[in-house]
Length: 359
Length: 129
Image (tube, rainbow over all chains, first blue to last red; front, side, top):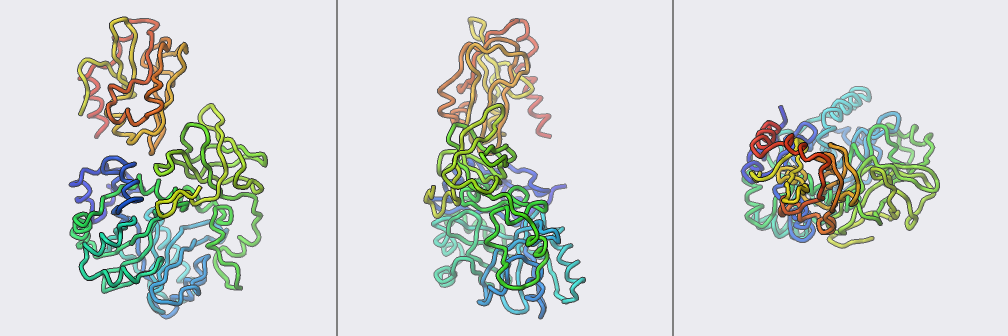
């Protein structure tokens, strides 16, 4: 039996093509995935991301707990509402999950976990909590739904759907959130566009979704969510990194804070690890489509594509690939696609941000 | 669901039209394009290539996934559709107009083994469950 979000019936009424996404019955598209992709780059798209799990970390030791649990440093979070992107590592330095953590007050942080990782994340956090004796309270918030409102028109759509919110949307800075009772609005997303991720009580979600649609938001499936995030150069857990991958070889060095003496899970393993690979962007020169697991041949050895797709914005195929160090942007590599070797160019990603092609 | 009665079909979702001169025109069905979604790449087989029945001979790729196209019967490729290669979205617009290649069957009797519209309809329905 697949798990359903509070918006499941809404997706079906809208004629979505539903798929099994890691055990969740989710909309992959509502028609044309490419049209949905462009709608987010040029207007406003709505995503049901209620399969992701908000998890509240409460207690006087909440900050100390997260400081030891996460590879990025929650000491950076000093202003209420501020968000931080971080990996949660295992002792071997592998990535258990990548998370966003919001600082609300000294006794309340909110973590958002990937759907497919939610159960193991919670188990791991409970285990660490017991081991460290910090006594934090961990509360999974399955009573909440999460809707992402993304695109250059996101502010206008949210303002229209939720009268009175305009004061907040006018001042809410990127990567910051505000909570009003059980409503939680963050200026975050996974598309490379301006926008919000709003958490509301599950029973409020269908009405809120309809109001956002009335205001001009277009429903977007998980298919376009993937092409949007890849153009934006954002990693996807399970593809670009997982428990066997070193975050320093996954384009995530910027999220691993080694500047202070802070002890965190996985630190000693990372410091002892030998870094031989890097995550780079690829643009296919020849005709075809780059896909994950295709082999990449470089003058310094072989690598592999971790995520690949056809970019609707660039009208050519792009990818993230883990390849040997020493290959730099501008270099040519060859990708094995079926029985052929096709030319690809190494580029610095992101590929697209705020509707503009950066390559 | 769009399954024209005058065409033949394969279990791997190709459609086949038997032309007056005995050649076969091959494409992927409406159902197949619907499953794959927006097409972004099509590669047809080279003219003159000899194909065994069931041989992988063309590729259609959507944003979502790549899918092989198989030879419905043994034969020789006599034409490939260059237009559909340069505009893959035509497969989504009309799967039965956007043919991929034409085949001269090695043994015309092989055509009888293909599915008719009713049998293909049944297959699609059974896969939906």
